[in-house]
Length: 448
Image (cartoon, rainbow, N blue to C red; front, top):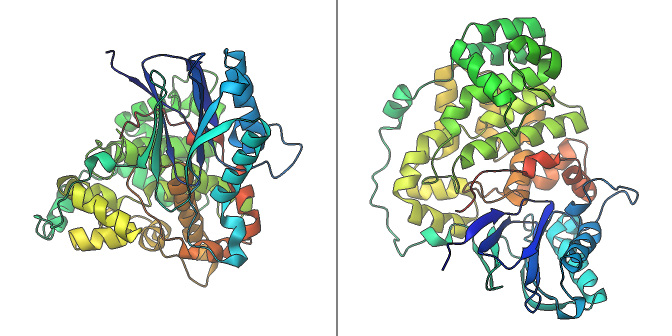
């Protein structure tokens, strides 16, 4: 039997095809996955839906993101591929709650409302639902075998779970020693971080600093032309990057290139895929930037770089998580809070490790403060805006772009963080809607 080729169906997209040795896979938190197939015509596919419907009725952009616009397109594509509507069978998964909610916050049950919209559309089209595993709080891996038309839904990382209940790992007392040996962020990047936090800089001074490090210059240019950041033209020099990309984009690329080697870990620790930590960091940075622009509370370069570095402490703990992965994963499922799971298994957490790194590298206070508080935002001054922004960005990534890394965000601060930034639970779905689609278009191998 031919080995199944895995195909990741990203948030806000679908795949339709004929019978073939392929496994369609979507990682679902709040999002909803719908597999539909016609076993007689040997046609099927999977759609990965973010939201129930557009917040603005005349919105015709990114229609695949929504149940009310994307699901009809998906059904039409199945029919065009040769399926018959009267033979279609559907399976549903996902739609987890953003967090424990009460009656005042029903608007936060985006997953539940998306499931309702999906079921309504399927009913109107007389499509039989043969399985529906929706709701709950856990991230799931939903798949459709395009050869046998079998579907499966299981918690992400289930294949790594064992009966191991006690840790054989002593408390990581050598964390400080490891931090001392950890290759630091290049000095050029640290200087640029400090420059932009002063919010008084020009593009030439940034480029001049980058040119002082040939390695960083080369990595920046490589990232400029990568799938995640590519412009319409190939960029061959920093001077071209300045002209074509502008100041803020150049800053983002330099910092991203500088930390990629730290975050680009294997799939043995926190990462659920190759480079999972890095992809989650970049996604959180992009969402933070979007929220900063939307609220007008924080300069976008600061939001991006802070979001990029918020989980830097995981670089320190990654080796310990890899050693004790089965127990760590079990604790995350029990606690639904990554900090509590880390404390019980490792006797520390990535916030503590991140603050130690921030002190050693002399990162700007804004970044250090966010590293320390991004799981429990609070505060009373405008300086705390960035903490709330990164908390929300991290939460959005964990719920709407899962499958990258082990993460469980405490949702008790969601409503208060939205309120702090001048938003409300009623327009939370609008916040999700403005997130650029590229955030969810991860091309990494998400095979778990």
